[in-house]
Image 1: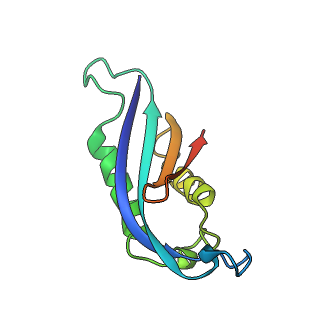
Image 2 (image 1 turned 45 degrees about the horizontal axis):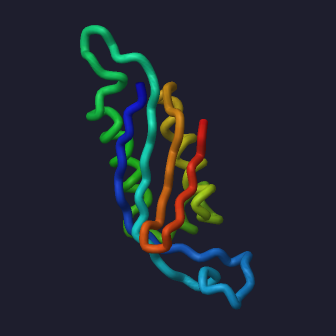
Length: 118
């Protein structure tokens, strides 16, 4: 079985290594959605793969590091592409959730998503 939990956050970033003609080279912001997918067999006594409360607690810690921040200033996100945000989140979640199967980060207003399968 697989469970999915999501959070939203709003943050600014810029991609300075890209041509200045591209709008994302300038400082700008997005509303992001991050989803994590965890797989496993439900615990026979608890009946769940992972306690959603534990997943929520871990995601709220990530949200605190990302929400209303300049992502370029977050350690490990100096180049905050969707791909790098996925990798950054997965590295922080994997130790506590060995069944982590995927991290998805989306910018719904742009219709853009990155899926990092683990």
